[in-house]
Length: 120
Image (cartoon, rainbow, N blue to C red; front, top):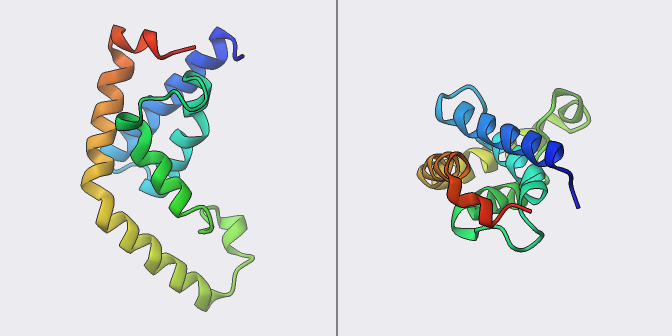
């Protein structure tokens, strides 16, 4: 079980990622991954509100084979990277509205008192 400091830190990371994606300061794949990595720190495993966090877990899972960091991208063939980048672009184009709505829903959820029932 995570302690209150870990829970609060993860909550802040998730809120920051959502706000940055809305403002265009963070790419969607990185933001979804950041949320996915932290959601289980604030919600019990498999007890997160799927209607709120599901889109981020979906995008993170669907794109987990796409390298995001400069260091990891350097390990890939340039032609293959072009294919992966096209795949990422198509994924984001398809889900962009859902991601942005998800960001708004997460912010509302985490900034409200009602989320306390789902938090560890």
